[in-house]
Image (cartoon, rainbow, N blue to C red; front, top):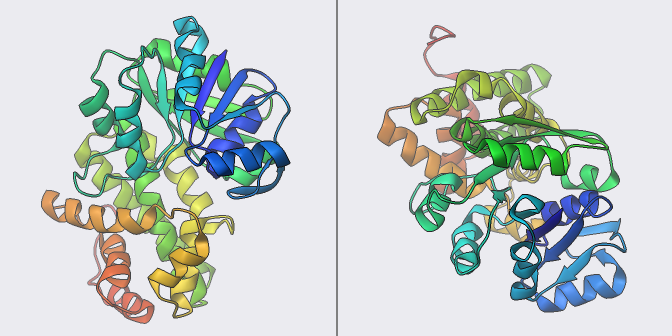
Amino acid sequence: MNITILGAGAWGTALAIALANRHQVVLWGRNADAVQQAKAQQENTLYLPGFSLPPALRLSADFDEAMRHVTNANAQQSLLIIASSVAGLRPLLEQIQPYPIANVIWLCKGFEKDSHLLPHQIVQNIVGDEIPCGVLSGPSFAQEVARGLPCALTIASHSISLRESVVTALHGGNIRIYSTDDVVGVEVGGAVKNILAIATGIADGLELGLNARAALITRGLAEITRLGGVLGGRTETFMGLTGIGDLILTSTGNLSRNRTVGLALAQGKTLSSIVAELGHVAEGVPCAQVVRVLASKLGVEMPITNAVAAVLFDGDTPQTMLTHLLSRNPKDETS
């Protein structure tokens, strides 16, 4: 299959490494100098250092070349993968509009900052409903995928043909692909878990213990389920890979950028210094602000999310966050 991956960040590069030995893969990056450096060193030292790029993988900074790779192929033998952040999704969609694309999936997790839209809603606004589209999500650290370690992901789409194409293309080796038509559920789980990973990082940074971590993850899942249900997601999705699975990984794994943000906040570092040190996007930061506003508008109770947003944007300390959460009135667990 001809596969083009737009976005040469850590996740886009890792997926390209995993697929290059089975398919004809082009990895496109916007930064021409960085792409040239990666070609010369056969390694993406900027975003995924330490992993050799397969000789079969083609790197390009030429957008037209990358798009021709999938538009010249038979529709059933081509797949366009957008590996940008949520903020970069809309500009890339506008850039691909002139091309006769057949199958598109995206990897980003979050809500768009100003519109409060989920990724599939952004895609509908730009591309419409005529092109088979979907989201690939699940518990997956880029470094582990690049190492060839096992992982399981979910493709969510309303198009049966797209789901079948993605499963056929990506399932194999150490990657298992499951499928669902619950696009909303998959995207909400992927977005909100990043906020909760910041909360868990704060708790671990304050050395609150494993009991507190377990409580935060469990009550965080309740927040995902409440918001996701109101937006149209299904409860069983939140119990699966893109819900509880991704939440556990991001909240407890030391490779998690969002967890790292929480740990650093607990040490008293400022958000600006943390973001600068990361050098990568931590989607939970902008997502916390959006979800706080959205939950308030929809009347959905999300105390952990609100507490994280207060630390990130309102000047609350991590200790204040803890006090606020512990002082809440008792309630029925299932309400």
